[in-house]
Image (cartoon, rainbow, N blue to C red; front, top):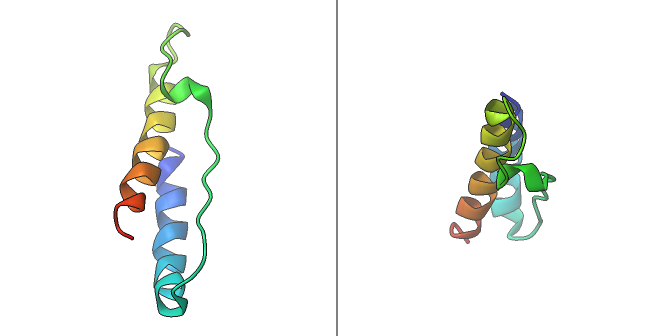
Length: 62
């Protein structure tokens, strides 16, 4: 799953961003996170939606 790498990077840089009280985390995803048009693409869609959900969740930590 490609979300684990993103989580590891955020865990690494988040203490630095909090200490400096500035910075941005930018995640790039695709529209496929909300679409289920591709047959057998559910795992791909799930990982994209997980990235979207993670990003939205982090906005509330501010």
